[in-house]
Length: 455
Image (cartoon, rainbow, N blue to C red; front, side, top):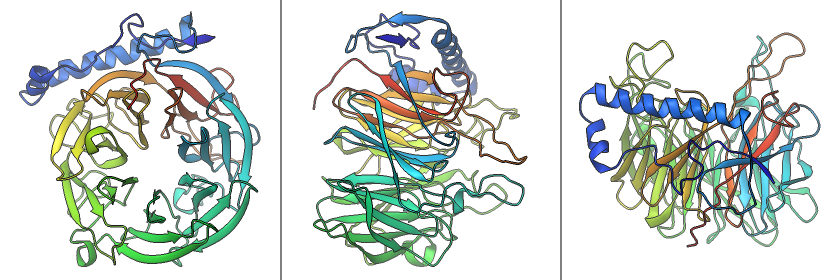
């Protein structure tokens, strides 16, 4: 099949963009060294972007080489895909699900063949707009999506959570976590006890809700509410709450909190201290542990090997320890962070990629994938080797602007990612654009890492 080769050196079995231990230590020394390292990463991104759209290379499915390559795009029918949120691959059924706000539905794709299958509706809110015709994410939906067996769990505006029976495509249970009109956002599922942790990120303070699932009927029952403020959790979450993940070994939920205990003008997205928190599925309203992290604003979170947690840092910081902007006088110093889930110790700080939303560990090829829509060099799919905790590739994706004149449509960003461990296909939804092939109406880009590392 034809594949777009985006690797700087496709013949190499492993393209290591980051440096090894001595160079990682050097990054902690004067800023000049860090600037040089980041500039080299940026040049690789630019080179990769040029290669991706000018050089078609013949590649057989499963061919070795280690480079993540664009294999195909899956066009999305209906209203052009611009507003969307979290995606999920059910490895057992090799099915991909995408929370598609533009079509107020969940898109279903065969993750084995890369074929669009159908759309599941459930009375979702779709894209809602502010008075100035910019999108209001807090009132939009669907948002989070995950599955277990025949049940698909989806969050929506109005703090709504539903179960869809995948054998019929019908909603069999619907609950709300709060009277708030704001969305229920990301969620994770404890398959052992049948418990969902659902996050309301847009409320102040943000909170999580434990919801029990009847595994036989899919019925949902709302349980304890965990408020992320000093009175209930021992800290104040001052910029929402993000991606939760279930750790079956520890039998705990973990959750990214972008910013904690911030005071002053930088709060709400620029505070230097964030955290990952640990939550027991039987919690009555508290958190078990708080693991602070610096200069990251944790957003995406995924469980990797050795009970490590990869944090996708939602905001890149600069060499002065300040949230980076395009007009910054200091150099960007983007990082992602790997934590030990047992004690919160920082295992690795991986230089070169930040500004991520959803992140995913693919056990099939041993890589972490990061949907880094706000990486300083432009939006990319970041690839980190989970064995060595080194950045191996930055693969260009795309963001698009919204439109505020009638009829309006939202801006679109490449902030969602999920992978099928059986064929190592990595799915990244892209907003409607004229850059990627067959994507004028929006598409799901399918990338592949041909190497396989079975667990």
